[in-house]
Image 1: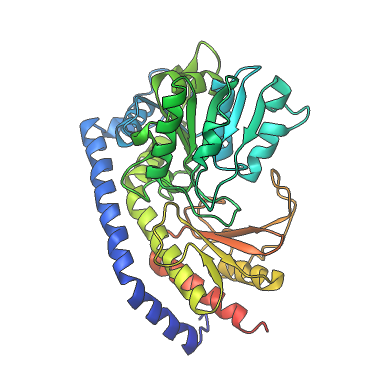
Image 2 (image 1 turned 120 degrees about the horizontal axis):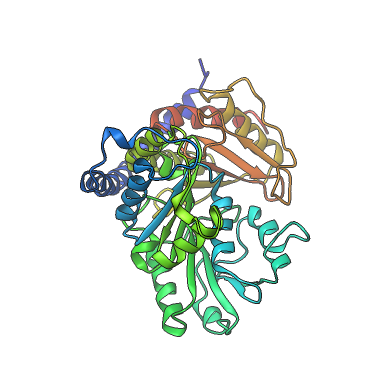
Length: 412
């Protein structure tokens, strides 16, 4: 049906043979993470009564309260906020930033300029941004793909209230940051100023290692439920995990001061949020295998990829440098054609809210735009790098990636 040539089939078979040890490594991570998640379900006595939802104010929602305890156990955090009405990762980060920062404070990014969608949150003019509330911002660039510790030491002035670290690569040609490196940086910061709140943008990174940023001292660890933690089943939402102090501040901003975590009807979303989180270690492993295969196949076809197939991965994202706008767009459109939902749609570049350049995005997903399902997106700018992530099953993602590779072979 997909008319894939023998050349692509043969190259794919070579790739799978070469990357089989990496798949075993990924399976080992998934097994350990699954044990951690299962233990949290058992220890918190998750029952059928937790799976139904509430309406109205949502007071005493046992399902919501237990789910937040399950997340806290998995993340080894004092407290969590897990809500279906957090609309995306940027929203979760914004809740946290406005929760902990006050006029006159400074936010410092230790991993360079944050992801595009935070630009308006930080710098917007007249839209209720941090800048509008008198909160300043600075950042330090990465040094050879790693956090510049010297820059941090020289920049921690008294006005800095919070440091944010972005684990994933975003739309940058750089490595993702390991939890171990994040831990080293947090220890350095806390040794200098123990009062600084360390915030980790954990999007795309959950369950790619056996530890999370809260295991190494992060005050707040934040992500989206239509990425890793939702396990492809959560229909919306986000989470904030960390210390009691920091999570409570975020909760007061997510609802209202004085109410915090006490309100929030779950509207029959609990079942999918529980089941998605339970499935997450396995689904993330499928996505990681898909990314490794994608990187291996595209490298064999002569494209520069980041990470390379044998590199240790700390997120589910595979970047491919095309140096050719038409090839990048064709590859992205072919991912859509080989998707289970909206395969007939044709992605085209458009002015997507929150981005500085036009963006093309393929996401033929069961949950609209879910990055844990196979998706591909890119800003329309040189050197035309496409970011592929997700895959509910490795088998379906493999077909789509092979089909997309085939589609660009005919472009000279």
